[in-house]
Length: 95
Image (tube, rainbow, N blue to C red; front, side, top):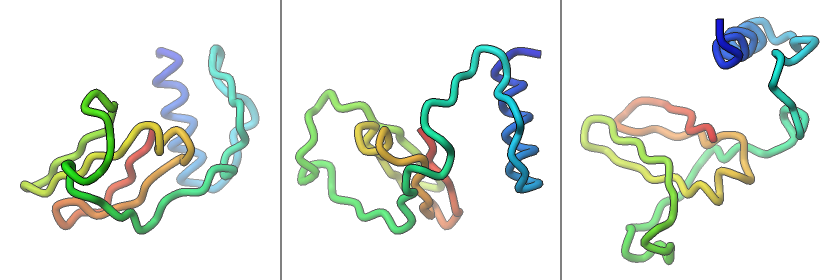
């Protein structure tokens, strides 16, 4: 099992049980304690031509049933998660 898979399993167990995993998997370093960065719960969006972002900005893009969102990675670097609804489905955009 790879480090990534171990981390995913430990994170899923933590999320499901509400308990903290005692140690991170080998090779994973936690720099900021969980819960220290505020999630965005009601994101507001601008049309791309109004957003004042450079053309080469990196974004996390999501499209579900024709409904599209682009989450600025510079913004996501300062937040753990954006909770949103895309295409009528609740999602969590995580970076």
